[in-house]
Length: 114
Length: 117
Image (cartoon, rainbow over all chains, first blue to last red; front, side, top):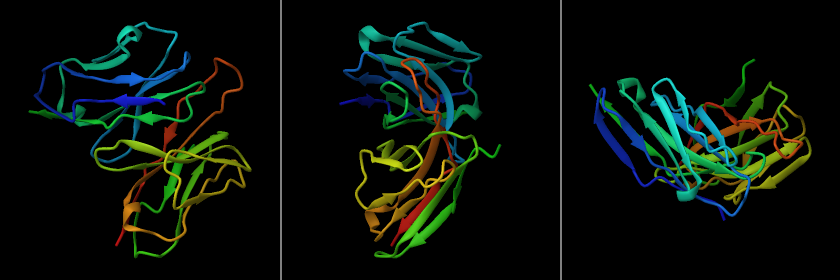
């Protein structure tokens, strides 16, 4: 069975600090996909990134970066120089081939204080 | 494109009542799914469909029915609402891959907040 664990339930930091959200996954599939979604206070789910299991390159997008390590089954998300607008619940998710049936972690509520 | 739309945004039901949550997408996506979000549990898959006329159960299907008569619409029916079905419901859609590498991201609707008293 597939499983995603986000051990950090809540994180609170001061603006401009760097913050890393942890994601650990379990799967027996050789091909799988990992995702991060953001859920701001307004409630919608915003897609941030998708990673394939056969591509371990780290990715950077502006202040966001992702570290995918198959050896530790982790897909961590770092926000550099955090801003108040980054305050949200962040979900890590996993799926098998086709990226259809998503298994979500419990989510991490991130609060950025001014 | 409107993307994925859901109606209603909010709904209050009494135990035993039935209702249908509507979901529509205008992106010609084959794959559609319903998730529920409960505090501390992330999102869990209720039902999904890989095309018109084809549906299957997800992780938490009990108490819900679905059908897919068109590519665009995927309604979720609560037959006899129970307080345990109080949740936020999200519909999602994506293309369905036809080969070993093609995939696509699921796009989520804005959600329906349901309270069952």
